[in-house]
Image (cartoon, rainbow, N blue to C red; front, side, top):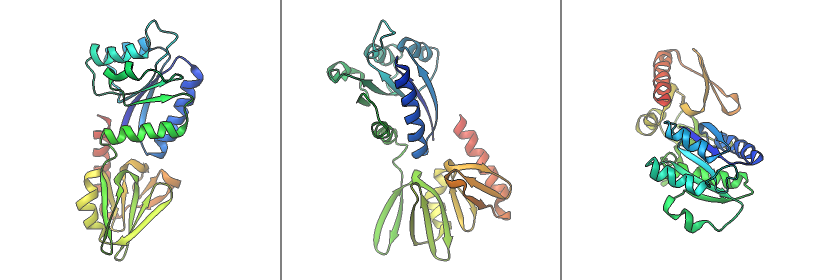
Amino acid sequence: MYLYIAVCDDEEHVRLELESMLEDTCGKLNVKYELSAFSAGAELYRQMESGAHYDLIFLDIALANDKIDGVEIGKLIREGLDDHTVAIVYMSWEKNYALQLFEISPQDFLIKPLDKEKIEKAMRKYLKIAKLWDDDFIYKVGHDVHKVKVMEIIYLESFGRKVIIHLTGDREISFYGTLKKIYDEQLKKHDFLRIHNAYAINYHFVKSLQYEEVTLQEKNIQLPISQARRKEVRDAYLAIRIRQSR
């Protein structure tokens, strides 16, 4: 997944801290993103008025460098641009803005100082609302049905009748099943690539794709691409890249 994020705050140290926290959080959640930073709300609004698109905006309320504050910028975005889809996360040192923000329908209101926990919570909420984090992978252990978020799966490997799922956070899940059936029924539609009879990988964790092997972002794990699948894998990989860049 790829997100366009804007950060607007007149305090440089807050912008830099937030950019660093977003880098860490998006890395943890496997979210690719492009970030634009602004010190004034009017500058942000002009960019959007000129056609710039953002999925998520972190917007300070008390913008000392502007004649209008973040609340007014939010109203301009909603009413002037008729943009009711971009998610706005407001930030402030003060708590008494709830009623003023009601008609803007912000996703969140964060009290400064910010920390990674607040930012990760806001990001997870956005992903859930945008339905970018909702899809579950379903599997059975014995008679019990379990599920895990698809975007937390790095890759799957098969040993005989057993399948091992490698997840973010150094977690593993193993159960009995057939990799081909799992891939065809649940994972192919989520941009997974079956690179080998024994491996299926999540495209979003690919660091580089070579002719004979793929390197994943997590710990630079290298997995072989079987000779019979090399053309199919490369074609599918390029098709996903083109679609993701649109």
